[in-house]
Length: 115
Length: 115
Image 1 (cartoon, rainbow over the protein chains, first blue to last red):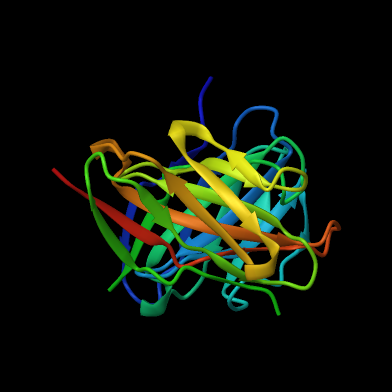
Image 2 (image 1 turned 90 degrees about the vertical axis):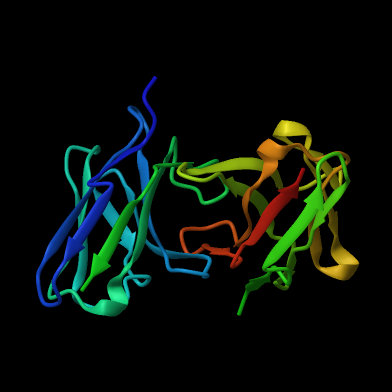
């Protein structure tokens, strides 16, 4: 079966523009996670969804970041008024159930460059 | 606050040599511990995990890790590395067993293989 997919694979934008990053989880996976991976850094946990709800949004870096999930499937991470420090690889993962100790299956990521 | 430290940013070993990647965590109770691998151009893949029981856990691709409570460590080992093991390796810890649990990733160790 298909794994987690993300689009676009690369996104170059100008400072101040809004961007949308998309994640398609593995079919049947109820939990979905977003991470940010900056150069030379580990993965920074942003947000997770159980179904369509996000119980914990505290990992989002600022109010310019938001995420939604519809139909218990596709999720979109939106960054408004992008800044250069937003440049990073954004990773999405999914798992069968929402429990951080369950195995997460990761997508290939979206590399965001803010000029 | 919980934390994960991977003290080695970059390690180079010869093909066929043994490997040990270090991971230290800070958490009061026994955490859930993970090792993930990120190969070039691919998403992260779970190598192995420790929850409880036998402190030596076996993973995929011939990797193993040992949980040592007294040293707060969860080092990853492989007896004989292959060129295909060249990748970035991440240690992660999950604290707690509730919706308030957090997952923390280390900053990663990049492994290069010398022919």
